[in-house]
Length: 466
Image (cartoon, rainbow, N blue to C red):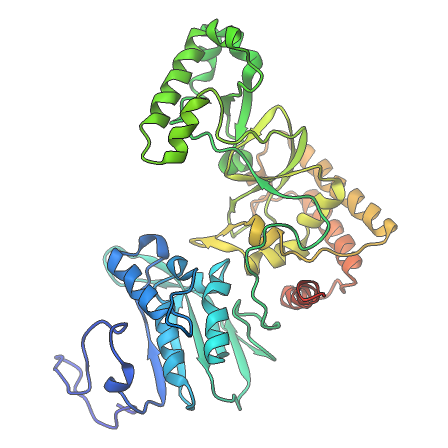
């Protein structure tokens, strides 16, 4: 009523001349409202993997560069992003301000650079205020839980304080970047190799086998009994769930098996033949080509020692549980692996500093952390410690492993449950945190937000060096 300067009897609903129905992405918004003061709304929430053919066409027609060509990454952003583009376009040369309720995915992971960098470069928008992630429970019967944000943005000068709203608190900010933190406007884009001189992280092994090279826990005893000669070729198999929850799983790792050895194991041969048939039946040409080597996984990454990093982990954990594995364990593609890594590297990665960075720049699966080697790891600004500081971090990292070893009956899920975490393990992590923060020159009283702001400064210096 305040906006349109007219009293309205809302119920029952009527048709009014100032309501226009249709697809907002097909409309010229100035024909609907030539001179708005504010643009407010709740655009449709549709992730890029769930968009219909028509919705994908919509966003490709809207999210375009100065030449009218869709951005390369426009096919992998949330549907909501098109409304940000339309609003930013309408704001040009005006004092119009906008605020949209959105899915939090547009401020996480790779989508941040894909959405906000074009908006910044094309239209010069900045964020005036933001509500960080909150859960919006639908009133529908399905009671869907949606994790939302609200972003207020404009092109006009901002004469008021920039405010971040978080869990009922109001935080004044010097600048609100696209990750909704008080930090410089940097966009953490996918990077092929680390920004610092550290070991390369890679992905584990995709079986691409239709399950035929995998031996599940309830199959293991019978398989070994029926095919005892296969035992030297059976290794533990771990993905994120198995690693964190200590679930048992095995696989046939036949890299060094000779044709004669394979031929002598009929149950193994049966699985190889089924794997070949599964690959040949695939609609994917790359997978069909794998039928030429049906005894092997798609990838064959099996270093002698490595740090395993789960791709997905609960957001309730203070630390993403990582650990050292050896050549007798095969990591699936649901784990990242860091070969040739040391205790020093483990200490940095398991620190509160790295966790703070990860929480801001990683993607999310619902609210669970989705770690990324190209975004989180490869862009992480490592410290430049003295020899003494690096040795101290290696010592505190070993302290974490030692504390874990006191509880051989507990999984990492048990140990890192916020209600169950043993105090000696928590103290070991705190000692490691202090050692890592000292290597960065950070004060231990620094808040996580302040820590991330400093990391963005370090990243900015590294990314623009030379």
